[in-house]
Image (cartoon, rainbow, N blue to C red):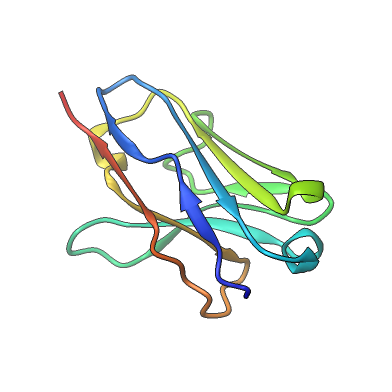
Length: 114
């Protein structure tokens, strides 16, 4: 099974933090570039951050300096540390290959609200 499983979302106040996790089965995740994506209501799904199998990263301008993507290849897991959260970060967050191959999971809801 390739489909990843995301977790760690929730409700947080503006300025707060959350850490998302994405676990995949098998070693396929550890040898490919992975990305975190998000989709807010009424908007297109967008790339938030990506990481190569070697650890190189890139981020959307809107999250630079606030979000950090990382990976643990031994655990086939990719993480997204989100700090200084803003209401506009509210969305369903997904992880997938980068670029995506259609193996979207259920996602995890992140809601930033006071």
